[in-house]
Image (cartoon, rainbow, N blue to C red; front, top):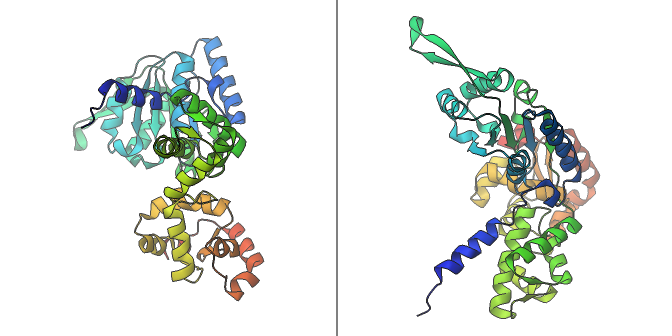
Length: 355
C-alpha cells in the first residue's frame, strides 16, 4: 500500500493556485486591457481615492477573476468575492455592501444573473454610495438611507448584452477580454510549467497551446493532464510526442475540439443534416444545458469556422463537415457564401435560440 504524503498534496494544490498572476506586470496577454486598467489604477492611487467601477466582459476562462484579484493587489486592498446568482434579494446585496470597508474591492461575478430588485439597489450604491433599506410593509413601510464607504465594484460577465444600459453606464471602465493567440498561450504555458516544476520543451508547449482554444484556463488544464501522462509514460518530460499522445487520450483533437464540441458538431451534421436547428433542440440532442452549448461550445466552433449562428438556427459549415471526415451535402457546399451572409445578419435571433 502506498502512503500519500499530505504535505506534498497541499504543496501541489498551492502550486496550482499560484498559477494566477498577482500583479498586472505578471499578466500575459490582454495587452490593451492591461494598459488601460493600469492607467486607471495608477491615476486613482495618485489621487488617493478608490478607482471607478470596472466591468470585465468576455468568454469564460480568459482571466476576469484573475484581473479582479489583481485590481485589489494593485490597490493594496482586500477583495470581497460574490456572484450574481448568489444575490437573489435586495437584502442580500445590502448586507454585503454594508459590511464593506473604505476602499475595498467588491468582485461580482456573473453580474448579468443578479435579480432585478438587487440590480436596482446597486444603481444607487454605485453612484451615490448609499442604499435605502425598507423597514416594514405596506403603507407603513419606511425607507432608511444607509451610507456606504467608497468602494470599487468589479463586475464580470460572459453576456454583456444582457446587462441593462443603466447598469452598464455606471461603470467608469469597461474592458473586453479577447481570446489568446498561440504565442501568448505558449508564454503562459512556460510560466505555468516553471511554477509547477514541469519539464516542458518548446515543441510540447506549442502543441498544447495550439489545442487550447485560445483560453488560458484550458491551456493550464491540458498542461496538468499532459504532465500526468508524461510522469506515467514519458519519464516526466513533455515534448511534442508526449503532448500528442496525452491529448489523444483525453479526446482533444488537432483543432482543440473535445468530446462535447465534436458531439455538438456531429449531432448537427448527422442527425439534422447540417441544420438549421434551434439551440434548445441541439442541446437536448447532446444531453447538455442550452447555456453550456451557447457559452462554452459555440463561440469556439464559430471562431474556427465550423458552425454558423443564423436567424433560422445553427448550421454546420462545409469545414465542419470536413473536420468530421464527412462529405458535405451538395446544397451545403453550394450555399456557403449565403451562410456567411446569414451569419452576419443576426447571431442571436430568437428562432435560432428556441426553435
